[in-house]
Length: 457
Image (tube, rainbow, N blue to C red; front, side, top):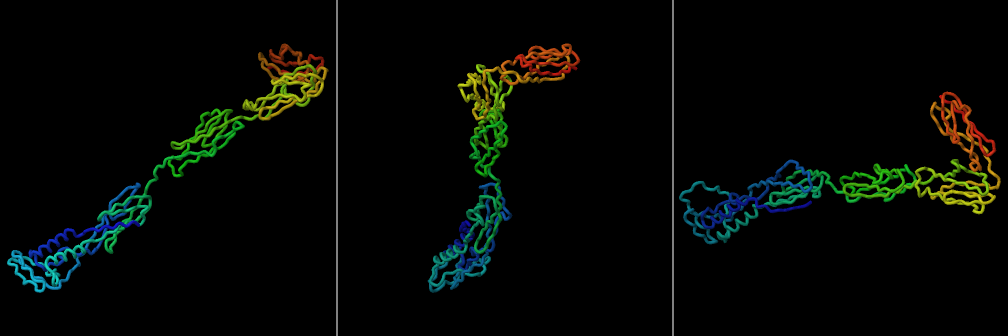
């Protein structure tokens, strides 16, 4: 505990009065039989109290309050003389006596009220009046002072610094402390409660667990975690934002990929920010090879000196273009070649495999069995709407199998032109209520055909 000790002159005026009496005594203006008790009074502490005496409450760091110590003294001092002194008259100065023989008392011609013959103060044998005065002053100097000590039970909560009978208490941190004042063997205390509201501590840093996120799939989710420093900072709430929500959105650190490209995610707390770069590049999940609008796979017949325009279709549709880039290759360039756009040219009889590979590794291939014979139609398929309303139209979709058939052309025919008609491209027009059968026949001489029944309502 912090101790602050100050010596307080408690009987200042009494002391002055006592010294004045002693001086007067030396010049014969006062009777020598004046007690020290009447002159000043001994500095013995009778009691001590503190103002304010109730609990003190402080609510801000550095807030102060002044306490005052109230000390009461009791007059129980006495100085016993060895030889009585002869008082002098007020008008005529007394003749100083020799050290061995005291002077004869002089009667006061007009006495009023005589001081009580308490303990008289006279010089001891061999002592002059001047020495007696100094003796009285020394006695009183020892009696009229008391030492006050101020202490705090916990200076880390409330510190105290004395200044005479006053002391300043300063709030340091939240908690409770007891301030004590001590004079002589007497003490007084007051309780101090410090309740400091948490001060606003500024954010100094925001840090993310990752500075970059990479997505290879649209619709995927990854989570960013923000750490705010210091731990006791005020305003630790983090706000999130994306500079390109077409690529990525963010909510409470949860980042969702929306489209191919890049975006920057920002986490902000106070005046500090942290950023993470998001890259979205949808990967391909597959690739298909199409010929004449239909997917081809397995082994197909092909005619020498014939060319086929193949098309690679990558899934999903929103795959990143750089991932969806397709490279074509042939297993035997002497049998068949393939261009960068997928055009295959059959050079001679034999077997060859044509492969399409995406930049990120998706692959599809088809095998061609090449020969000089024509490739005939083996099957025809029609797809469309079987029920139509009068005065409406639709174009039927025809599939010729195999897709490598030399002649892909067909003839179209309606069984009831009053109900529905069809042109050479498979476009059907509904005329009136009834039923009609649409027939497609291959022109390559294979006699392959397919029918499609339509009902008009």
